[in-house]
Image 1: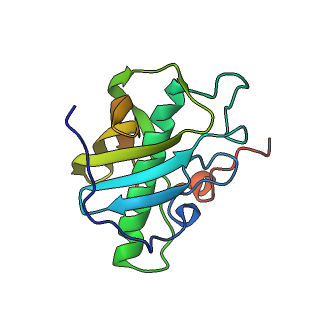
Image 2: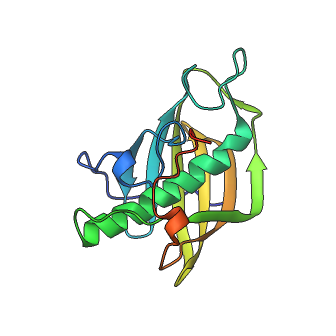
Image 3: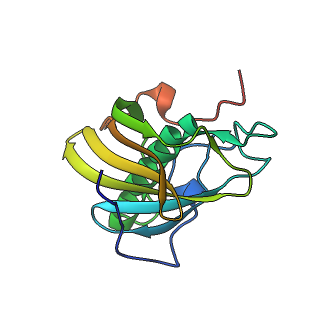
Amino acid sequence: MTTITATNDHCDFPPVETLVPHAAPMLLIDRVLAADDEAMCTEVRISKNSMFFTTGHGVPGYVGIEYIAQTVAAYSGWRVQSAAPGSTPKVGYLLGTRKMTMNCDWFDDGATLSIHVKNIFEDGEMGVFDGEVRNGDDILVSARINVYQPNEPSPATDSNQDTTDP
């Protein structure tokens, strides 16, 4: 996979919780670092308070696909809010991956990871994105993901994706 880079660094991105339709504890990424018309870069710091953290190991590497998916959601929310400030982000779905490579088993406690996504294809409600989870220049996880964002959400998905209530 080629290196993915968003070229427009901003210090004034909205808080990630306004871009991604997830509520804590399922909002896994911490902030947006950069974005442009085709790509976005976000960040997550791994700590004992991170969702899925296991003492002595960190966060499992396979969670990287969710970091990538949430960065795609932030990219979508950022584009919506850029076009119409104050807009609410739409719910989307990770359908799967065609190819995922994991170069680590765990994301270490204390690591600050950057998540990079690039829009490869969009056609109405469907999209394909390349994503990478990096620690510095090291690519820890890479994946091409397929996503679906319905134009009209169903009433059951018209709110935050909070999973803390049964």
